[in-house]
Image 1 (tube, helix red, strand yellow):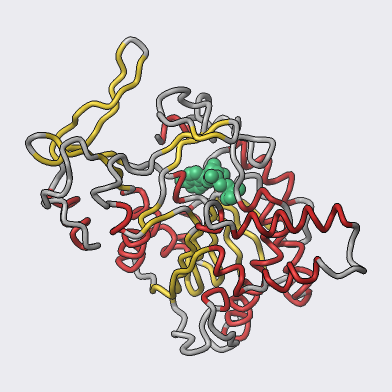
Image 2: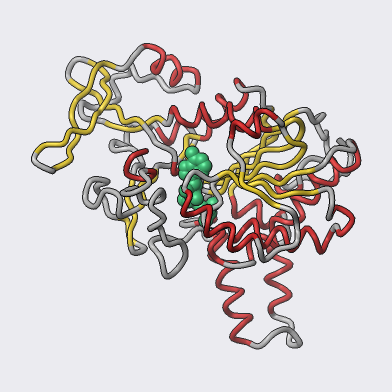
Amino acid sequence: MDWVLQDPIHGYYGSGQVVFGVRGDFVTASSLGPTLPRLLLPQLLQCLDVLATTTSEDLALVEWGPGDGELSRELGVLLAQERPQWQQRLQLLLVETSPLLQKRQAHHLQQQPLPWRHCSPATLASAPVHGVLMANELLDALPVERFTRGDDGWHWQWVSCSSGHLAWQLGPLLPPEVLHLLEAVGVQLAQDAFAQGWSSEIALSHGQWCKAAAAALQRGWVWCMDYGHSAQRYYSPQRGDGTLMAYGGQQAMGSPFCRPGQMDITAHICTDLVRHWAEAAGLHTCGEVSQGQGLLALGLAKQLGQLSQRDGPPLAQRLARREALLRLVDPAGLGGFRWLFFRRGIHDPGPGGLVALGEPATAEG
Ligand SMILES: C[S@@+](CC[C@H](N)C(=O)[O-])C[C@H]1O[C@@H](n2cnc3c(N)ncnc32)[C@H](O)[C@@H]1O
């Protein structure tokens, strides 16, 4: 998965052939225009205001896996408008593996007023920031390991290549650490409930990422947004083939082997495992909410209401904005996304928690 996504010549992201949005291979919430950033703004302001009033340090908004860079660009414009006093204090930091996507991001980031730069996880770890770290559909693009139930127990599932054809192949037995990890989030693989041939995946890469994210933050929040399931649903005996999927031309392609390097490959996140790894890395869980509920808490209903005012923009524009808003909350699509919030070095905000989690706002750390 890492090769076919990240190889600089043949990889789908690494070679820069990925096209986001309605005219590309798949739609992400960020590729739907300015609707999402406008809605996310109150949550970012709440967090950054807390930091601005409790430290004299510079502030950062880190976007990890920024795709085309449009979300960061829009947020740069909006944050500069809302808090002009932060012009010299707030910077945008982008973490991206693909040099070709970095170029696209640079093109977009030049169109906003805040200072910005690309940086690596190692640079962030050497100078951790005070800020908010966002990752929208990043974790679902990180490589996963597959495993399956064989006739003599649980095995890794490897990929074989024979005469140019890729196929699953039974690998060695799963090490006990993996079984213990799943047990830690309530999954008992030893149960007879799992039929022979039952397969799924585990993203050990998420554990590494949680460590890198925690190391990047001196004080602040991590906000992950992704397709995901709890461990109970992810590893349910009824879900016999995991969540690994390939996408191209706005369609799910079924087998990840059909056009390697020419389409996206993605797997849902297991929210319980991400939480487990985040906490092990020193992050503290603030809460979890679906994107639909989170956006409603951030004022989506109000924005929808404003679109019906007669003195607003022309009807065609209002209808397009309405469609974008509804698409973001559609429970069968982007609205079913899970938002996970973590904090580090920040006191529990108590009863006035994060706005997106549906609790009253506070400006106190
Ligand atoms: C599915 S895209 C999401 C893009 C964007 N956040 C959006 O919502 O439109 C995944 C992004 O993460 C980047 N990426 C993948 N693995 C990465 C890694 N290990 N570190 C940083 N970026 C990575 C990809 O190149 C791409 O920009």
